[in-house]
Image (cartoon, rainbow, N blue to C red; front, side, top):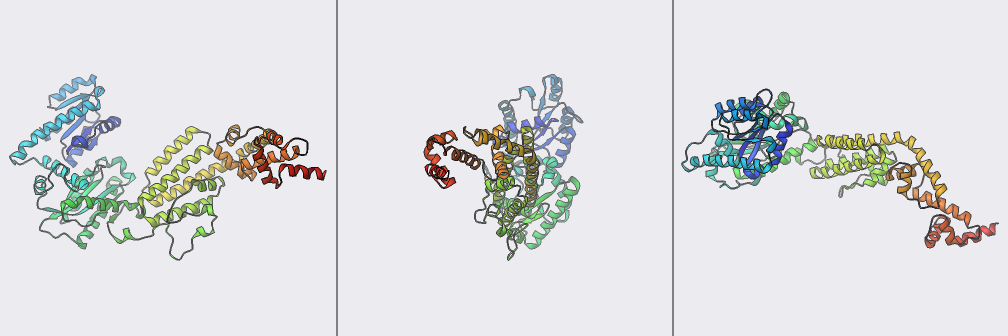
Length: 558
């Protein structure tokens, strides 16, 4: 897997370059980015030279020409691909004098053509590598590093080297013969680390160079496909696999690494540690163990070392879990406010909506507390994702019902997704949803006073036009409220649903008409119920008498 660094001062262009190529499919990976030549040199000093350098010509601080001149002092053979605009072609010709491999005009940069240029560079790199493999000649340190990282990445992902013989020969070529892995550390950045974590491997490598001096162990460092750094702790083949003492030493080193990254870069990282391993082919299993351990930060908190199989990862309970023997508050709640049972843990949007529309802040808070308590006990990260997505869907469905500003609602949805993407623990999710639902209820309370007039207007309309066809959708549109919001507000204000109120008004009018000579079926039509059978059924349900029985009783009383 050949390593590529992209140097371009415009982020959107860098993003476009990364996105338009399926790097893995052509045997390459983007291992770093920089906004100018100086940043690129710093990146290469920390992380090593790439196999291919893609650079713009005109950039601030240090332009592409200066960068290429400096790179050529470090490596006369490194493949360089330059980007330029048509008006900058004179710069491109200057770069060509420094033995660049190829150039592309930005305005003509189509994915297919760009890929062809990269494949041509790859073929050139492959050809340069063949003599070294055939004649077993010593290879350069950069080539060994690329081969090693490619092999380790394949082992992490598949448990064997894809397209290579994951055997002694492959390990020898990668410089790993006589070395055995002991543990794998999965170094995960928190949301606060995102702005600067693009060069995470270089930063971590720099910190480790100092911390690891007295560790008595070796290590290999490789980013995975997502850019998450994997630290493979190693020892010589003659050394023992290790035990509690080695693990404790690694835990201490991990804690110091976390502290140093926080102090120097402002990053909050969490480190997951695998169980012990003794062969390179076991890296895939170790990778899954370490990633799983790091994922438990959702329940145990960030900025710490989490070891696979340790007691804290296996323990039940956690923040929000009910203490054994303690009585649950759910027993005192009405059915709609009780938290889901542990065996199903499903939530009902209708239950939550009814609590929101009824302004039942305390009941909703208890419901969410119970829900997140169950999630804390389960310690199932996938289940947390499902439940939080469902809660988010409920929030984003309710807001359009209670806001007439569509643009504001759209911005709020974007804000919700942005804020949720930065939450790292279950506790953060719990607090966020509590605040979001309370904000929604507070907004609805503010609207309530003004919208009461809309309900009065709706009841007056029904009393006047009861004989016409009136639907929930038509009446809510009439008073400029959303259908769901109107239905819930109507019930809260009137004490019965819109349909119950409309039907009651119609039956009251029908009772008056039945005292005359009109037929029952005609009376139904006159009050807006066209089906005679349905009219008779509804009339009897409300009054306890059929239309004819009511007529007879009314005449007798008069």
